[in-house]
Length: 139
Image (cartoon, rainbow, N blue to C red; front, top):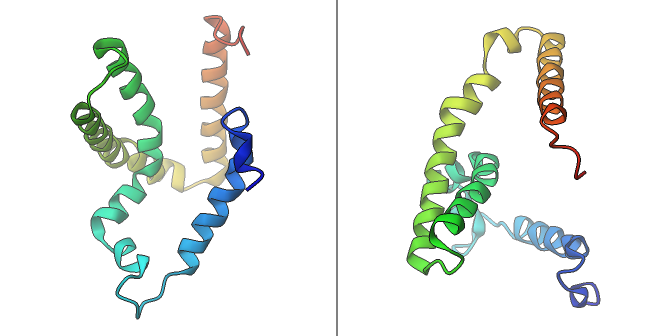
């Protein structure tokens, strides 16, 4: 509880509480209990959101930022729900048509060194482009 009192200045101090809470929910799963979270986790829609959670993580902030720029900072609740639905839709689509094809690409799956080389080349390309446009000056 002392950690929680620190506040938003140091959000990483709240991280252990989130980890312990998540672990408690996972450990509470009991197949025989009708109130078990396992019943929810086995739902296909919940699993689809879980599968696309990284895509959702990547898409939610740009969508929200664009909404704030276009609509202003006072976004009504219904509009926020629509933005969540939009982010989820884009996340599911990008997982299906971008992430999965790259992850399962025969040219990458066939050779682990080729996969690492491709990843390293992407990193060098992105960092090089950032340096060229001066995007790392504030870091």
